[in-house]
Image (cartoon, rainbow, N blue to C red; front, side, top):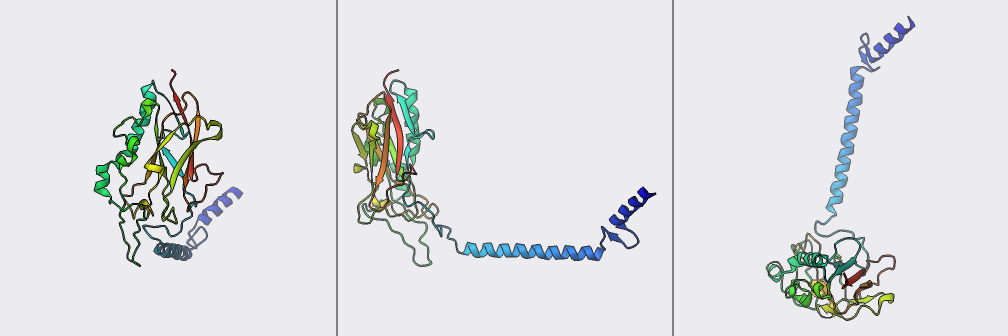
Length: 285
């Protein structure tokens, strides 16, 4: 009998036909609860929507409102086939260095003179290419300056399609990471790249050639206005050609940016204003 009573009690709790209650509440009670939560969640959704709308009104589609960036931009090299920053090959083994030549071909394709002439402007060198907005009137899209592949001369891949790798005189391409609004010089002196061997390899690096001359990033490529505002922007490049590096030995090299308006990078970040890599050219199978 006790079990029958308990069973009846549970049934009446779920649905009581006498009081017409479902789970202890009448239909009007459930209706009021549902109405309350419906209004509550509509209010929360409206508050969230209003907050997002107000926040979006403060944003610019072409330029970040706040920039939490490093004061010193990073540097990277090409060719780069993996994350190790090592260029190792054997002159006698074509397959070991052809991948580097192909990587440079692919990287430099957008810098072909015909492509640059079609998309970008022939700018006045040695001065900033400023394109400021007029109050609330946005000067978009902004124009970009040509960086022609031929400016890399012996490292352009035009006259030497293997970029010197077959002769043990390889070319390395260096670029500075993009930073919106950065002006790398305060007195008209263009930033430039210098490369050297680490202390233990100082007698192995040999002679270097830089292209463009002196390894400079011309001021006309600055400032950068952002990917959306400056859709055809071509980052300036510097090529370094190693003429007589010691063969069959590891040579640890560091290249760094030199500019009077870019702070020296932190020792904690090996890519801040500099890039380090290993170069080894083997001549013995």
